[in-house]
Image 1 (cartoon, rainbow, N blue to C red):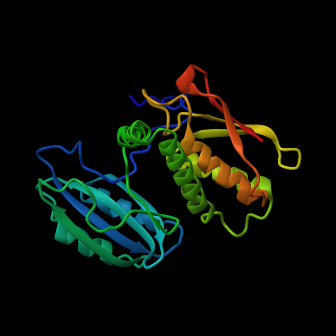
Image 2 (cartoon, rainbow, N blue to C red; image 1 turned 90 degrees about the vertical axis):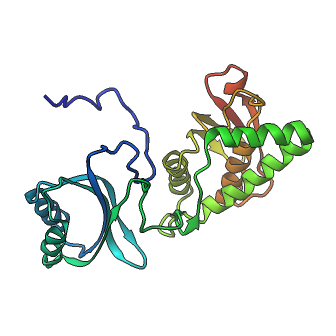
Image 3 (tube, one colour; image 1 turned 135 degrees about the horizontal axis):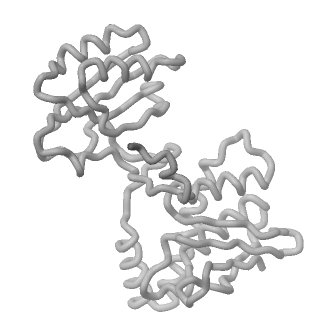
Amino acid sequence: MVDKKIMKEKVYCKNPVLMNLLDRREDGSYFEFLIVLENVPGAIAKVSSTISSFNANIWSGFHATIDELGGAWAFFLEAPPSVSVDSLVKKIEALKEVKELRFRKLDKTEYFDVFFFPLCIGGNRVIILTHEAFQDIKQHLIELLGTGGESILFNEGLKVGNTILRNIPATLKINNEKLNFLKDFLRATGWGIIEYQELNPLRKTGEIYMCNHIEIGPKYSKRCHFIRGILTSFLRAIFDDEGLSLVETECIGAGASKCVFKLV
């Protein structure tokens, strides 16, 4: 019986980020499909219904608008031995909503999608760097260069913040709208969860609270130089004031419940 209250106690679920078959069944046959669809109601439902009629199973996937393709649906398909995938493909291609279809059988060594490269967010190429790797980089910078390493982290944070700022949609004109977009962007891309507290750039008052962010770690975590750089770049750009700065007054690494960055 399905537990319909499974999300009741959850605020967020972990984002798997990439299509993968790391938990695939050993006896299954797996394919990746890339289907370009017309942007009309029911297009995905018709493809899904066709797949179901063949007793095949959609394992995981995503649907997105991609510049060079338009509306694209990519997914992994698990098919039992009795399924003729070629027949299934012909049936899907016959649907009027389907503009193009590619598919490929994945062998035992292929666990990730085969149709997309590189990984991009908002037109910017990105890579997946583990939390542990970031912590190691921070640790080595500070151990080798001391305060110089801290300055490098802060300045690199400024650069990352400026890159993120380029993703703000042109339709967002009001400062609060831009700040809310950036807050949402940081959460969605895994940087951390932030809250703004009465920011007043004219008086240079207010704070930013942050938790669950990338710079929290077991060592050299009593000051979050990289995150402070990202947040500083946001405030300077949004309020058009290069003189704005932040100081970290509380840090999770020093035992606080959240990191607090105060506007100065």
